[in-house]
Image (cartoon, rainbow over all chains, first blue to last red):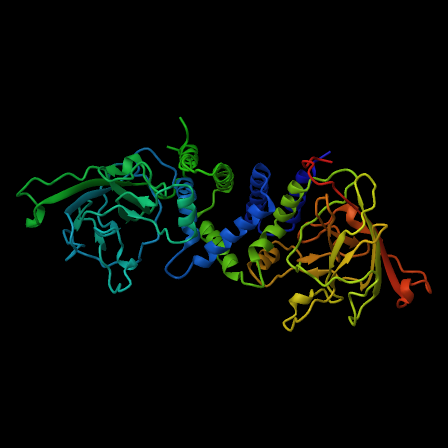
Length: 290
Length: 290
């Protein structure tokens, strides 16, 4: 005979039998099965469950226009990255993806090739250049390269209370050879928002809240899957312990010192440089493991 | 070689390696394993995951002093009942438990045996009497029998905006023969709170929000485990589809019409009656399956 627990789980799943939307039904069936499995595994006391309920409640109540604490929970539990992997299976030859992150802003200003997205920002000067190609090696002209990054203190423009206009974000268009270039500054590593319930969890588990330095790229070209990714300087701290599990080995790049006297467009000295070539998946092929 | 998903799950679990509290570490390890298993099972799209994040957020934001929407979610997914089963394993001869529910109020007024907890409430008059015994059959004098129930319209006293003092709740003490008795009215079936995100989920899955009629009992006696349970009238609707999965067959009882002219203490006519005998587990034995 079934144990009362097994009978209960079956009863709960059967209760969703009349759900009309088959996808919703499949999601709830799987949820109940895994959630009950978790609870049977840890056998929480009533006090522990109350504490869990309180934790989930406080996460919801910490959310506001400028803060999505549940997304942060998903991030630090690796779920956001897991969903990114499942939706964008690595494919040999195509650039790996990572999550969008909370600081993307649509419609950043479009700038001409070689422009400086850092303007008057203090920091180590950085020249970024690269190419956008298709999986078959064809270079893609007119691709939109949307870039955004934090400043030298680890903050994005939108995190400043007096934020007025975009800083350290812009859109470029690849030239006829599929190339783009811009000036910026070196991004810093920075902590994820650690002042809420998720930060409490990190502290209670002795996890640090830091992400390694990175530059975000969103690249779109006709006939290709949109690529959302990040490139990480090889000398950044926290590369092996990103709080949100976003690092892929293939996305770590050298940002070497530029040779003196050779900065593009007569740019500033001293300077560092990043050269990174992106490869987009052709649209319409079903995802597959690499 | 491991798939990227498997490597990620292992990486997330390893990130909790420095957690000092072994119980917290075990809980988070199990959580990550089951949560990633769920996500791999359903492979949510980014849009679906955003919707899930929004749902969890709205549940947290629906919580206030008078409403615990996360507990309600736990209830309708059967988790509250599962935790009750795991913490109070059924044991042959002992009364089965069910969850406390959100309407318990500590320190209800103590009343003498035979008192009427319904006072001026309209409804079918009900006489309740029973006994409290230990597993060895010994009747327990001086046990505290805390009872609470909804009115004939399906509402508990504390749900009324103009709530001032306890109604349909009281504490009794068993007499020298371990017996108690009181007058009340028949409780009604009623819907759980369906005006929030959890109610939206019930509607989207074509689940009704009703609980069958029941009377709550919390019984305490020295040397015994506190018993928290509910007794359900056998003629109530929704006995086989309780929205929160609280019904146990052993807790369904006949509430027959009382024979005319025989109401205890010269009580009202017509009347129904419930006679139910409770058996408490001796304290200190470890839980076991029945």
